Length: 558
Image (tube, rainbow, N blue to C red; front, top):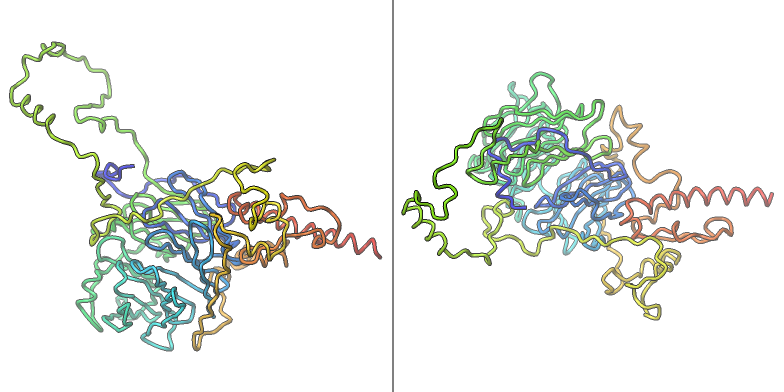
């Protein structure tokens, strides 16, 4: 759809709920790609569900981790996706194939991941109780960023809009601006409250357009700064925030904050309830409060890059907030008029004449000039909403959509597959019932060479405690329910360890009996990816059935 026609000359923020996205599993975090065509959702069973946001359908499911996914980030071209899980694993994924390129194992849980906005080889990682780490994917090397106080390692970090600088903030309110390439300190300042006391930095978020960024602090105030002013003030500067946004009535703490796609609005999700507060950045006034279901806690918020649409996650469901679409028929032609009631029409004298005698000559001249004008129908103008201010053209190698193949349940013959005598190919039956070695060496989807197992790099960080628990798993007051839902179901104990990385099929011997194994219960990577959770269900049933058969077998022997 032409984005130029979506410009509404009124408000550019959502006003009401517009449905939900059910990922089957409980959703924990979500993020849009750069164009807003795909939405990646991280779930508590370790899967990444990629939604086609235009059709509101699931385009792909990646069985990424064993433990819950806590952070996601798209690359600039949309071909790659990095994810972090609560077991301290960071993985990079190829979105088209669903393959894992490489993994990194950290000593402590990961709070946030972010791709470099322009360099696809760099990823910023924020581990718990540690200084931020800048990963280089090509050579698996890492750089630990300098911090202001070595005793205070509760640090959050973020790239600026073009990745030239990294902004870090600690629990004492100190903001450091570091050069991305040299890690040298460029500027710094301290966020203070009205009584000159410091306050902890909870998150730093940059707008997609412009130079503004916001800081969410523990004193429940969102401060908006201009990045150019920060750099001008230099080290130990005292910049004044452009806006201070807060809920003066309820003193609401903020769970997640972000800018709108055009940078003109700011949305903040409450940490107490499912409520979204929207402010206008230029004035600082609260324009809308969106209320979700009462009693639910908010987990994540994301604003669509080019449309006035917000997604929020609570109770494992992705909610969508959008504008109320009102049909405006007068927009089809400038001389169209909407009538509230019937009006008697007065016919002009020459309205139905073959030649309009009342027509003036200047108008006719203008009409002839318009007819002679050549219209360029070959040149494709770039969409301004998809281009940065320093770019003239769009990225034509970008991945905007995912191809979806239709699924055929239990086909008698496979007319589109390889012939049976083809060597080196694995049939669907062998794929489901073969050994783990066969699955590891199965060819890729495009018939190329066998998939290589992704290499895992262990990141050593000095002085970082290794017994930390991710906040998603150890939430006070709600920890009981979180711990029960996190990870794989208990019924699949011992069977699920190989779900995402080392798939292993079940044979009759694994079941503890001589019952044949139907192909529907065999775990297949494609079934889990395309069927929306069928693979997980089959595995859980397999684990439970195996335990029951084994118990019956032992009783008969006794």
